[in-house]
Length: 165
Image 1 (spheres, helix red, strand yellow):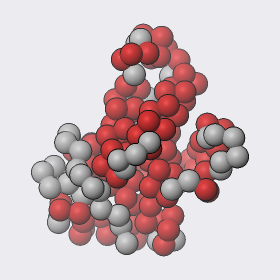
Image 2 (cartoon, helix red, strand yellow; image 1 turned 90 degrees about the horizontal axis):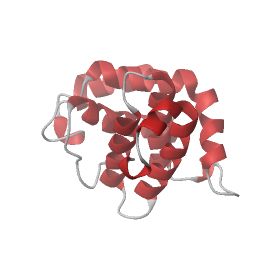
Image 3 (cartoon, one colour; image 1 turned 180 degrees about the horizontal axis):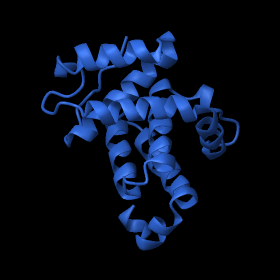
Image 4 (cartoon, one colour; image 1 turned 90 degrees about the vertical axis):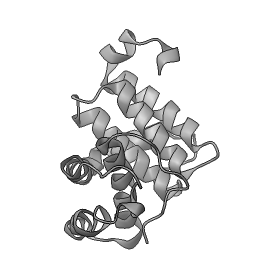
């Protein structure tokens, strides 16, 4: 049920946790799986068999749990914000489920995880998008997160040039 990435992004335990959170959010969205069941499935089984998540890095389980619980807690705030960023005529419910999961997880980090720099959030979720898509979706993620960075992290945007993001 959980989609396998076409390629695994290289990175840290947090990178692997982000990838896992996108897979978990996808499963919750598509199958309606309960968050407690997802947390148990991933932490007890999928992380132990890391081929499902990342073949070289074990995910940071605490960070994964924080992302998943945070998205669920803030989803009523997150979804309208993402909707505003989509092209005219597109709604969040109409976009690919993986892309929806990527944007939800990334926006949660932008909104709530101020300890993670904006540039890291954007780069990490572009990498996650590249793990699943070979087409325009990584550029969509970049554009939306850059725009949302202006809204939620304006001081970090002004510290970086556009070419850095």
